[in-house]
Length: 503
Image (cartoon, rainbow, N blue to C red; front, side, top):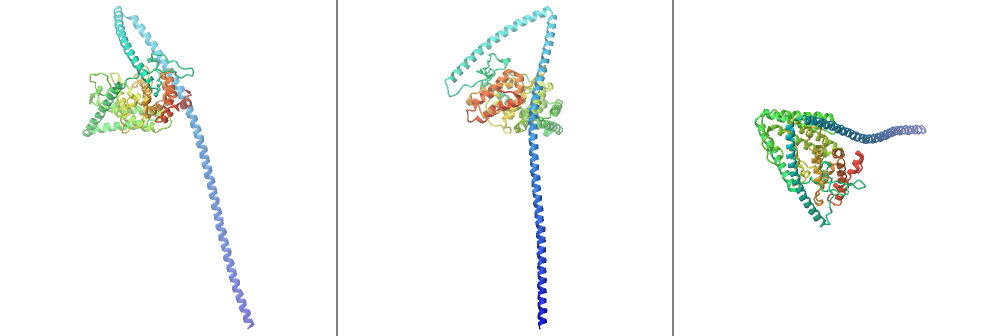
């Protein structure tokens, strides 16, 4: 009995030992699993830390690269601006030298011809000079009478303004040297003390009459485009040719940019190649209907498709100005200038002129339709497609500030730019709108101010200073135009930075 008890105890103890051993084994396996999981967590944490550190390092490197890129870009812009100014100055001096040489050569030829004239020819010349002198004296007398009447009207207007103290007298921009009859004396600080009203201004009725005629030209161009479309419906070969030419013009105009000047030249040549092809199409029209003529003229027969292609070219240029230039916050002057070069080269091409007269009125008709305030007439309704008047003004400046060598006709004379500035600045203060100031800001970008001063010299500088330093601050007093006037006034900082031109 005692032995049975002992055996039972041993068996029970063995069972307990086995269970304890199994429990220990399970505990050890659990600890191993916990340790393995802990190591995995540590490994994952280390990888996460390393990834975060790597990302932070990459961000820091990108920031440093971006800062270096911005610094290099700013340095490049400054050097490019300086280089451009130096090149333009050199080109201007070279052009002046060539003009002087040509003038001297022409003078020499004239003197030689005069020496070889026969006595009868000299007598006829003297008779012609006497007749011309009489006509000039008559014209001068008539002009003096008109000037006197205009001066009396201006004096009456000034007296009327003097009786309205709540409307301060607005200073006027200077007259270009070649057209000014009054000396303008700068103050001690270099600014204009008093600027007379420009004689370039015409009355509202006259400007409206001219504007209406350009709108009529624009309407006739629309009708021409419609008639060409009708022909395209019935003549498949004609349709394919015209559509292919239009597509090429649109494509090449869209690829003109402010960076690739060499590429731009190729694009412009491609455009003119497409227009050249239109000269071979036999259909003709009265081209005089698409030219501004103050007085009636005889019909001038010319290629119908030439007018059509030039009209299409103008439409694509204006769309590109609105889309490309209008989307930029900087370098907008350079972008507009590239398109201005295209317009100048196309319309100065003698093949596209009529009796030596460029057909630029096709472009001006589109401008009168889309941006009438450039021509001193009110905006009656907003055009459907074009809304960025600043971009259009930049394009206008790019077209009207081009210089051509002697003997080549400038299709957009520089005086047009001056007239536009004068008409805006000479408006009564209460008639100045936001659009006027926006147009001034875009027309006085550094690219254009540089050209403006090259063309008009000191008068251009005085006009620029007057608009930015006198006219714009005066308009900041009006809450409705304060933001736009500030944009014009801030150009003083841009010109100082990019052109080294403190005002």
